[in-house]
Image (cartoon, rainbow, N blue to C red; front, side):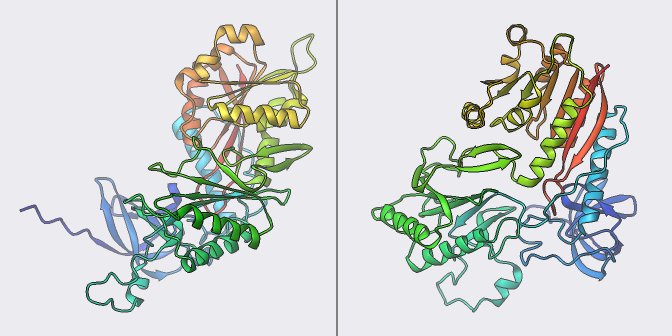
Length: 486
């Protein structure tokens, strides 16, 4: 017989002190840090500990005793359940203040490098409907809150009641096979709500099954929306054909979508038989319109397909790229005999930054691991009649060798925009070996950026730091650092 699990304590009359990482806040109990979600500094609460370690614990709110004066009423009815937008109860001015502090803390505590005074964080132009891309899962089992379960009618003997009702929405943390149904998401133009709710209604009325991730059966699997600042809309529907008649049902749904929502200029579908929802390795079929939409930035046009990477906050991406461009070229003097600098753009993706800065460069050499992204980058240069870009696909440390530099020239400026994991140490060594005069480091994770700055510190000093908020109501923050060769 196993040991009885020790009951975790209830902490009473606790004051929330400050914002912490991952969208949580922090309180103190005796000599222990307590991390709590969905509260704001100044709240006074009773807390139920749910996880206890030696020096800290995690807890949930059992009762609010007093609400903080800085608390803001969340605008979304799904707040606190779907797992997104964890800072809706915190005024936006306080959100960006916390993000500025987060960047400073991580660069100073992890990087331990000499830092200049930071530029004030650039808040997002929009704080609602700011995303140009959203994905929604479909499942034959929806998530119910305790209140919803209590309100359900008693089930008949031998039945499961309504607990296996299908849903379209977001996955719930800790319940990978269940979806919490979303009636209205405020992160994207409201048209996606209208389309998604209509698809759900059509599926229910026409006996279209929802996907069962455990049993891997069910027809309707996933929805991906994109819109653009040109007014175009894309919808990709993922199906999972199981039995005879499924394809006919799927095409009926696609035709219904096309007829009901003429705003969709790119309507695409795929039969995904894999164990996960990724589709980059699958062949997609265009049901109506084109297989791409366009985004406009300054005088540039970017072609965005269903598999393309493009910053999900269009207007704030423009602010981010302007910072990167200014950090790269302001007060930069090329070597004698050159009127413009040679730029290497590492982790170039679909070449958005490379094409955005090309006018100010002698040439931009973009390197990216994903071959499909490099093809998109080349197309984006062609669309915009940019002839001073070169793009290469492959592992950064394998491509950026002494022979490569000898062939293309030693870069005056390196712009690097790595994934959340930051740069591999071998890539850092390659950059040090390339010895550019200036490095512009764009990061979506200041913690790994700080680690990399420490590795570069012997040869490069941090000259400017500019945090940029791309994702209001979340703890995520972008940061741009300018490094100058010592």
